Image (cartoon, rainbow, N blue to C red; front, side, top):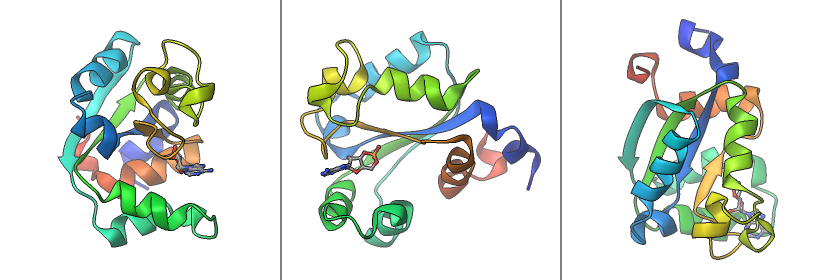
Length: 145
Ligand code: CMP
């Protein structure tokens, strides 16, 4: 474990998904992130390969939506970012809102920009342990500024 991973409890991984990038919502979402006290330690636009998407979402491999999720996540560019804040994992999940945009509180990212449970605009790590793994999936220690 390197120094940056040791600080992982204060970091989380955010993904602006292909639906939100294609619709031109990246700037608005990054603005919400900054306005809510997160420091962006790394950010990159990329297009996931099928192998990357399958590996990233491996925990969902047995779920009925897995193949569709992988197809969607590889359908266009995404923006991946490492966010830092106190209680970053929970704070980013609160700001995103419920997984299903129809159930997300008004004003949250998914309520504003998501259109279905799959096309829900953003991803966030669900625990500090997974945050460390997900940050490491996309970024090396030297990328984290
Ligand atoms: P995310 O936070 O990226 O984590 C896993 C993703 O799977 C989730 O957001 C949704 O986009 C997707 N997902 C979760 N549940 C369902 C479902 N019931 N049907 C389709 N997609 C789902």
